[in-house]
Length: 92
Image (cartoon, rainbow, N blue to C red):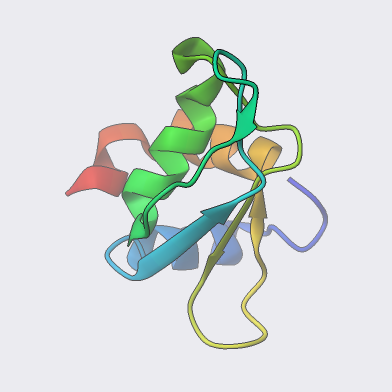
């Protein structure tokens, strides 16, 4: 994670796991289209982006936005690291 992703920031993302989140910038490789991903809980959004390549999506440009304005958005590497660290806890 970038320098802004301290232990405290990671824990804050875990705490916010039930907030609504938007996923943008996902490309469906099979259909060769931009995928319209419905809003979902932050924990589910992190899981989706972290595992999207397995499902046939290109998430290199993906961004997960959540929380109040000014809350840092999550990129694919952020989601992968949060998923690796907290895993199923994000889904509870």
